[in-house]
Length: 520
Image (tube, rainbow, N blue to C red; front, side, top):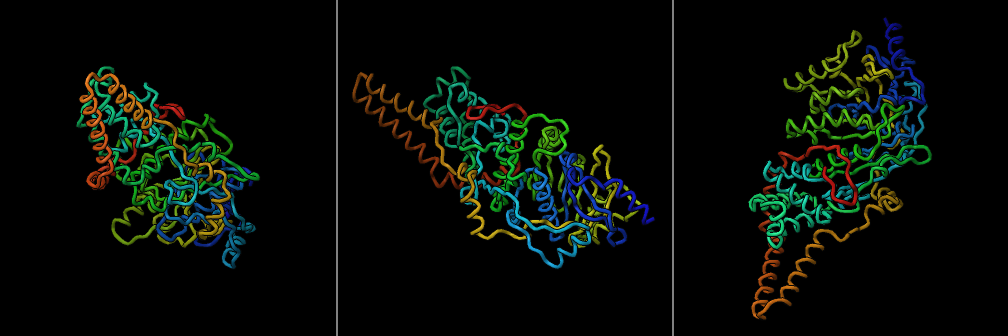
């Protein structure tokens, strides 16, 4: 029986080193099976995957090892670092008796080394290049979802953004969007309605309040230029794929901003990358740590769109790996698309936990080698249940694995090490450069000032001109106070709690036009 087990495992997992990544060594009855290394074909990693397990079972180290193996094979990765414990990818690992013994058992030489990494953040407070995107690049559909707008409000936002597109008014940041809506409500109302029809003042006011609420989560830093470019995520250095680490430690308290970024990122990658069909290895692998943050409170429509994107993005040579504590955090329709599974231990503390374990066991291929539900609770730290796909797309047999140790540091970088990486990064300098092009805010402000000057020159009575100018300045002052007032900020905080119900917007696949308004 043991020989039969070894032959079946080797038939499925014994692959050429250059065309695969090594995950670990198969185990049977709790003992390592010498020579039964578990390798996953690079060709199948764009068919997505799952890394799951309770806290402290080793799933972060599995993520770290896989990203490292991909880098060494020339495949770049994008890693969402929610907890701040993945920066160690940029530093060399350290030899210890435990690691050396583990790798010797697996049958692989341990060679600690650092990996080429770039650090990014969504806010200026974070260390690394600041990733941004413009309001126009998001488009009205995604923005409407983010702001939790109803159908009427979404149509108003669409028309206003169409007006800006037609008039050549660049919408780069939220300041531009607010100025455009203010213009439509006040000075430009008559001309706007003549061409586009009437819009509800109540709807426009609601949109403004929700924009302010989004600003409270730090979105004013995210929207703007310089926009991130997908090609910067596909770099290689000395034959190694660059690992782009997006440091999101402050994002757990800002769910709308995190979800906004994730959806825009996936959509932009899909739009910008060419069709590749079924490449020999992926162009990019994205690891979504704490994946439950993406799916929490997601609507049925949104889940369908995520499922669709998971299917479509594969043809671009992009793999998605969802990293979470429990497989049930990922919707069933998305879970069914994940070809590679690395399942660490689950804890059976409550009746709900035991039910979840039973469900997780049923999601694996049937096995005569293991009692899967029982083994899920008995896995040690650094052990996992693995199944993947063969190069022909067939599921591989379930295997209890002793997982490889990552070649990089299994700890975080120090503050000085982070600063050194950022200071030496050309991309960090590129994305931290402040760019404030002439856009809707400046253009509409100039129009208002010109109109005021013309009205003064043409006014038949000086008294009337002076009165008009005084009223205009008073209106402008009132608007500025509204946007900056404590009342609006307080309202924003209240609304922020509401918009988390509809955080992530629809993912479109229409080609976007950079630096210009585009409809998502």
